[in-house]
Amino acid sequence: MKVAGIALDAITRSPIVLLKDSSDRRALPIYIGQEQARAIMGALENQKPPRPLTHDLIVNLLETWNMTLEKVIIHSLQKDTFYAALIVQQGEVKKEIDARPSDAIAIALRTNTPIWVMEEVIADASIPVDRDADEAEQQAFREFISNLRPEDLIKRFGNDDS
Image (tube, rainbow, N blue to C red):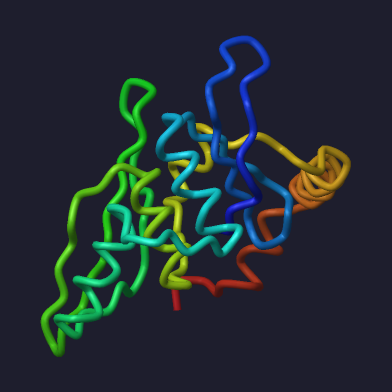
C-alpha cells in the first residue's frame, strides 16, 4: 500500500494517515497522534530537520549497522488498535520488530520501504474508494456464480474417480 496523505477527522480533529492499495480501490484509515502525523508529513514532504528526529535516528542506526528495512507489515487489528512490524535484515539474519503503524510508516517513508497490510486487516477496516468498480466486480462475480454448473467444475478440475 502507499501513503495517500494525512487527513483530519471532521468531528474529533484527530489526524488520520490514509493508506491506499495499488489499484486505488481500497483505503485504510488509521488514527494517529499529532507528533506521528508531523513525522509522516515531514517524510512525505522530504523535510530534513537540522538534527535527527526519532525516526531519522532509527534510519541512521539501520544504515550504520548495515541493516535493511525489508518491509513494514500492518498485520492485525484488535479492539480498534492496529499492530505493525518492521522486517529488518542484516546479512542472512532477518528479524521482526514490533512497532506502532504510525512509526513503521514514518520509517518506511524515509527508507522507501514497501508497506504491506494483511488481507484480514483490509477486509476488517478498509473503506472503498471506487464504489462503482467494487459494485461492477461484485456483479460480475454474482453472474459467474449464477451461471456455474457442477459439470463445469468436473471438467475444469477433473474427476477423482479415475
